[in-house]
Image 1 (tube, rainbow, N blue to C red):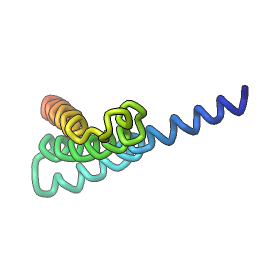
Image 2 (cartoon, rainbow, N blue to C red):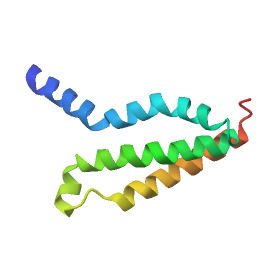
Image 3 (cartoon, helix red, strand yellow):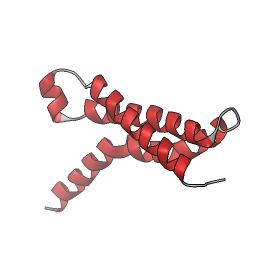
Image 4 (cartoon, rainbow, N blue to C red):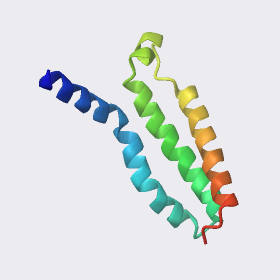
Length: 97
């Protein structure tokens, strides 16, 4: 019982680590990009890039993607676009600086 629980926890970490790494890296990247553009554009671009890469890596390990035969780059791009728009709008509406 304990072994199966530990294995499930390891599998969960293995699938979701790109999102954790993106969450840690994205504020710093957005801060660097604010030297050349407004914060809401920088945050949207970083969110799009990080979330597209993270969701693509997530879909590569998904059993459904293996059944389809492809990791779903189009799905990842759509998810990245949605997250970039949401983060860009939130950072535009909330006064951060």
